[in-house]
Image 1: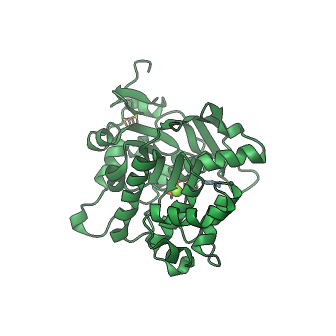
Image 2 (image 1 turned 120 degrees about the vertical axis):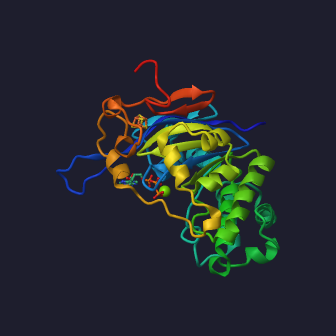
Image 3 (image 1 turned 60 degrees about the vertical axis):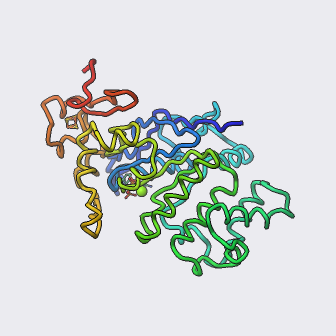
Length: 328
Ligand SMILES: Nc1ncnc2c1ncn2[C@@H]1O[C@H](COP(=O)(O)OP(=O)(O)OP(=O)(O)O)[C@@H](O)[C@H]1O
Ligand code: SF4
Ligand SMILES: [Mg+2]
């Protein structure tokens, strides 16, 4: 049976922005976000710090409840799933890995414990086959010899090995979708490529759908089939990775691409939170959220919010100039 597609429709999450009781301002961390994750593909979700990427990731695995919107999987709205049994079933379909694998592993427990636990909770294999499955999982993520690795504690592993254990743990429950939030950003440059290659192997061999969350466009170009670009809570551009990254429609994507350093030039420039970015998502008014940073803004940009328009086949952007809507 082929795996189902995960569809996100109009997903929205607001947080209180102010620290005091009187301050009713809200940050529109994720607003009206729609996309789908197909089996056997990697979708990169890119954007600067604070653009809402992790909030999307957390909404997909139900660490947050959405303000509105739906997440459909196999015809079921996952935001409405209730009850322990059905919640467990959903959790086994959509798994997440985190930026800091060390933080998500218990330092007092062995690798075997971390992988055996989900196998037991989700009754993936009979009890007497748990050890075999643990070894299979370690082998699948390139941690060999599995018997030796299984006996180790997190501090006895390198950063790359820990991220592989985190991925193996996500795979233990045989998910269809894996949401990987910045899986390589804390790793040495030399071992990042191994994790990226592992994601590609897994999507090809196991028909997995990945949502790869990153602020690193070079890695998105390397692994992704589809790219979603987020700015201040909204998707501002989406389409096939090759096309979005070689012929971007949105001025923000252009800005991100321009800030990708030349590998020959050494140390990577870090894209930092931009004041305009955070402010643009707090009680936003009508108009384009990128207007204060945009080099090609026109009059209408500060008055009317640009809709996401399919300006090229399967390639959409939210821009009055480069993807104008016939309705505006
Ligand atoms: N639990 C929360 N409570 C209040 N505000 C939040 C919460 N989580 C996120 N935010 C706000 O929502 C916005 C988006 O945050 P998010 O963590 O999703 O961004 P991000 O794109 O993942 O950034 P980074 O690249 O730094 O991880 C930010 O303005 C952030 O301050
Ligand atoms: S809508 Fe206007 S301000 Fe926004 S990106 Fe396009 S040109 Fe720039
Ligand atoms: Mg994040």
